[in-house]
Image 1 (cartoon, each protein chain N blue to C red):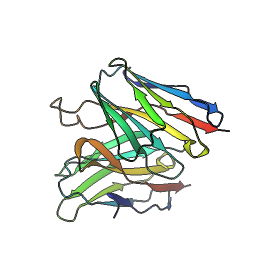
Image 2: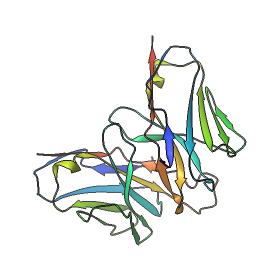
Image 3: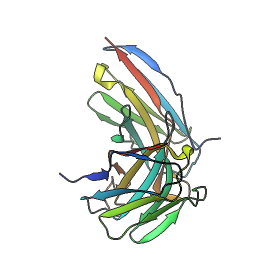
Image 4: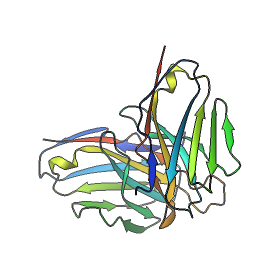
Length: 117
Length: 111
C-alpha cells in the first residue's frame, strides 16, 4: 500500500544534542511537509518542499532545518533541541495541481514523538 | 482572530446520538476544506473533503457555507469508535496547497 513512513516513532534526545527525524513516502507526491504538534494544539507547519524548492514558515526557529535528497525522502534536523521542542513531529505529503478534485488533501505519517531530557 | 476556529469541546454524547460540529474560517478566498480525525497520540487522518454542494459519506455529512464562512460536520448514529478529535482544515491565505488546522473538537461517545 502507498504510504508515508516516519522513523523513529519515538526519539529521546538530550538537551542540546542534535537529532534527525526521517520521513519517506511511496505515494510519489511532489510536496512534503513537516509539522510540529504539541498536546491539545493544532499541527503547526514548520516548512515544506515543493519538489526541490524549500519553503520555510516565517515563525519557524532557525534551530529547525530540513533536507530533501530525493522525491521519496525528507529529513528534519533539530540542531540544538530545547525542552520546548518536545512534541509530535508529523510528516505529510500532497500532490497539488495534479488535476484531481482531491489533489490538495494531505496524507500524514504516524509521527515521531520527541522527548528532550 | 485565528484563521480557523473550533469549539474545543469535549462533546460527550451517548451511543446513537447525532452530534454536529461547526468551524469558522477567516479567509473568504479559501477554496479547499476538509475534516480530519485524530485519535489520541496518533496522526491526523482525512475523514472527508468538504464541497460547496455539501457531501455525505455514510453517517457523516459535511456542509460548507461560504457566505458565513463556516463548515459543519454532522455525525449520525454515533458509535463508540467515533470518539476522537475532529480537526477542521482550510487552505492557507498565502498558498492553495498549504493547510491551516483548527485546534480540534473532542468527541466522547459513551455506552
